Length: 124
Image (cartoon, rainbow, N blue to C red; front, side, top):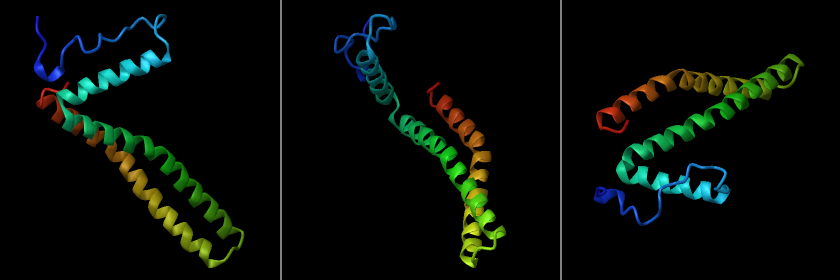
């Protein structure tokens, strides 16, 4: 049985070995790189969208925590009687916090839309 041209020759590199006892970390990383190359070769557009979405979701939690800490710290400074600059910084952090929370609520809708698009294209 021959493989499609866009997947390359199977002789270029043997298929990944799933027996973890025989493969070290370097071999596992090489298998991951091999697999990602095959995925990108099949559908580069969806792969780029998936990677961007994964990165955005990964960055969302640290930004949430940073904004929440900023709101709490500035609220504490304001309650302790700090200057007006603390109050203006608090509103900036509060606005950022609301935006990040809104994005967090919308992520499942983006993700389901992405999956629907990928399945229409034959991705998964």
